Image (tube, rainbow, N blue to C red; front, side, top):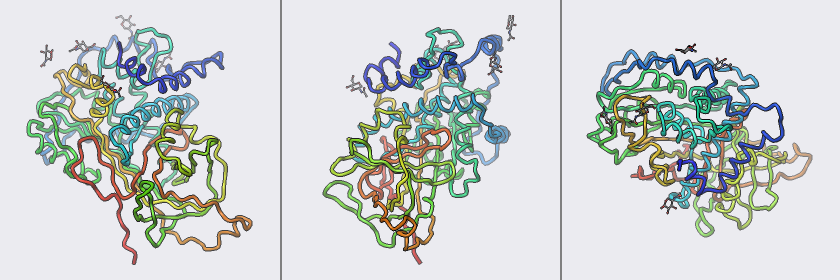
Amino acid sequence: MTLLKLFFNMNPAVSILCFFLCLGPVVCDRVYVHPFHLFSYNKSSCEKLENLTQEEKMFVPISIESQTTPAYDENLRDKTKLETQTLDTKGNQRLSYLKDLMYVLGVRFYGALKETQKGKNILLSPTNLYGALMSFYLGASSHTAADLQNFLGFVPPSGDSDCTSRVDGHKVLLALRTIDDLLLSSGAADLLFTKLSCLFSAPRVHLSESFVHSLAPSANDFYARAVDFTKPSQAAELIESFVWAKGASRSKNLLTNIDPSTTLLFATYIQLKANVKKASQLRALQEFWIDSSTKILVPMMSVTGTFQYKSDDSKHFSVIKVPVSENALLVLAQPVDSNDLNQIESELSLHPSSTWLHNLSPRHIKLSLPELTIESTYDLQELLMNMNLSGLLGKNANLSKISDDNLTIGKVINKALFKLSDNGVDQPDDLVEENGGSLPLEVTLNKPFLLAVYEKNSKAMLLFGRVTNPLKGVKSQGLVSEVVDGVERRVNG
Ligand SMILES: *[C@@H]1O[C@H](CO)[C@@H](O)[C@H](O)[C@H]1NC(C)=O
Ligand SMILES: *[C@@H]1O[C@H](CO)[C@@H](O)[C@H](O)[C@H]1NC(C)=O
Ligand SMILES: *[C@@H]1O[C@H](CO)[C@@H](O)[C@H](O)[C@H]1NC(C)=O
Ligand SMILES: *[C@@H]1O[C@H](CO)[C@@H](O)[C@H](O)[C@H]1NC(C)=O
Ligand SMILES: *[C@@H]1O[C@H](CO)[C@@H](O)[C@H](O)[C@H]1NC(C)=O
């Protein structure tokens, strides 16, 4: 039984969703090319692959402690500076298909996190998790490649098992890159978005040059370095100071319990910092109810204007869309009345992402919400283990396209930082007039809520999470050893 079947057997909701995602369009369009084929190999590229000589160029990364810059860094830097792709019809179809696959994966991981993170903040990046697994897919062969492809949602429509049923991972990584480029395309001065990826291998492990090159475009910065994992705590310190020097946010003691037999560790760090347009900080701290009987005081911001809004039909939750930059959409959902987050989590997770965005209508609203700095670090290996999928990147994984050496994949770190602030404007007091005299609807996020950040054109979900306590950063999955006060308080003059 493949891992995919195993998973679907346990998750009927997901398989139903995938059923609609995968089969829906075929029924209504006769000359329809299945979007799978926008990513798969075609006959001629398959032949080329077969004719390819097995001579792989290998290299050993320089030690993480080395002060010199290796020549290959330059090469990788060129690869990260990929030119923005212009989007044609095909490109748009690709993104549209991919965003649903990423959403499904995001929901699965969210479901796993909900079990281990009861009542805590959660922040995950579906695009980034997807990209990390797709990176391993690029390095995988035989059963591992097949299992990863299935897990990533690429189920061949024909059921054939030849080369044309396989997905070209390069195309997927390039599509992911396009999403990042779209996000930043319109001179997003009000948005900061960075992605750093690092591949750490044990000393003397040979890595395939073409594999490493193909990963580089998926980040703004990409590094490959050798680390001696047989001394785990020293390895952790070296890695933490290395990525900090390369621009990742400072973290301490995140990499505890590195397995000394590790020969490969993959880590990605994304940061998204945005301002809510026209929002101003409220002078006094505001109440936030972390549960029905406990309130804390948190810094909040407020903005009045016309927002896309809905209260769902069953009146369990309300959704508001907050523009934070030209191409970034922040969507916030909070339970109404006595409903709690559990209820809306289960309702939302049955639907593809876009239903969040459906049927919103403009409404004059005064929105108050906490200033946020949340950070999360997850080890994908642990998430997979919680989903009974530890075999995917386990000891028997065939990663022959990464290295000739037998690899032991250690942690696969995904760190995300999301910061949301006001942009420091003063609110005009007289907002009633703007709206023909009627008072705005007051929406205050003063109890646990869900948030999602989308890239506007592709509707790809960059971040998804819940905030149960705005003052807590997010730490997770056995990596925790300190609780970080998540809020940077501003010093008001
Ligand atoms: C097959 O794929 C390659 C690489 O993606 C592309 O250049 C070529 O035009 C495709 N051939 C056909 C017949 O679609
Ligand atoms: C691959 O090799 C076969 C025979 O060795 C040859 O007939 C075919 O034209 C080659 N295909 C490509 C795309 O080079
Ligand atoms: C991994 O896959 C490759 C390509 O299919 C195969 O040649 C190799 O024998 C496999 N390695 C192991 C350890 O199964
Ligand atoms: C994983 O397997 C265990 C034991 O078979 C089972 O109790 C648990 O529910 C499974 N977890 C998931 C997420 O399916
Ligand atoms: C890798 O593992 C296989 C099977 O466990 C073994 O036959 C092979 O010699 C190992 N290769 C290296 C380079 O250690």
